[in-house]
Amino acid sequence: MKQLAEILTSFQPITLKEMDGVKLLERTDTKYAFRTENLITFLDKLRNYYRVLEVDNSRLIHYQSLYYDTDNFKLYHKHHSGKLNRFKIRYRRYVESGLTFFEIKDKTNKGRTCKNRVKCHQIDENICEKANQLLLLKTGLSNADLQAKLWVNFTRITLVSNDLPERLTIDTDLVFSDGSISKFIPHLVIAEVKLNRKQKSVFISLMKDQHIEEGSLSKYCYGVTQLHPGIKQNNFKEKINIINKLIHDSPSTGQ
Image 1 (tube, rainbow, N blue to C red):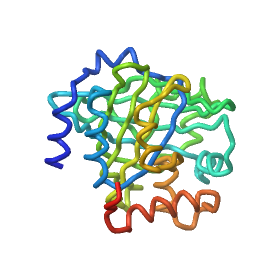
Image 2 (image 1 turned 180 degrees about the vertical axis):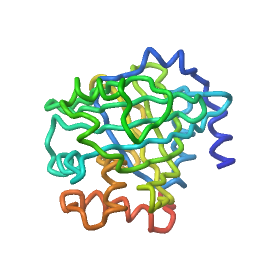
Image 3 (image 1 turned 45 degrees about the horizontal axis):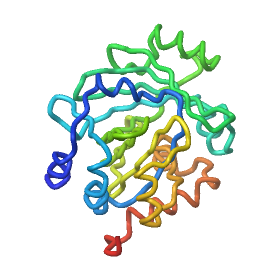
């Protein structure tokens, strides 16, 4: 962690206010997964092309998320079956800034991600009135249809391109919990490029150079499979196997 903090000091910073211009609430998302020991090398190659988000003098930001689904995991199963026009519903707390939002992520039938959110005082297992109004408007569901299913906590680095409307999020130290069982995921980095349209991303070019293919599983769906091993997951099997290989393999020396 000390080495990671040191490499991040070599990036120019960007503030939350400055990042307002690259919120990218409607965008295309591209995910990648790789082992943590490659992260320092990758960041070194990126520092001249991106700025790093800094909040209260910290560039490693802690996130707490609580995801909701129906009793029988209907939203998870829609993702598993590959259906578009699907939703992820969550509270998210940005620990360093103290900000909390209720968020709805909609994957459209054109493959774009649209995010709508409202600011809230805190994470609430019972979806509050203001959040419930957004939920009804965007999904037709209400808080009576949903249950708090999964906590996903992690540490995030957020990079913003110097030249493009592009954000890159880099997540480590994932912990999944359903309130009774918790699971820490070691050695894993999940990176996600957010662009408002297809453009030449320095990070995507780096991933191609390193022979790292896109296609990491969403944190919510992966967490569900880890805490509910009996749930249907055959369509995710290939991606889960790739992640498990990253977690359990010995460190790579070729990159």
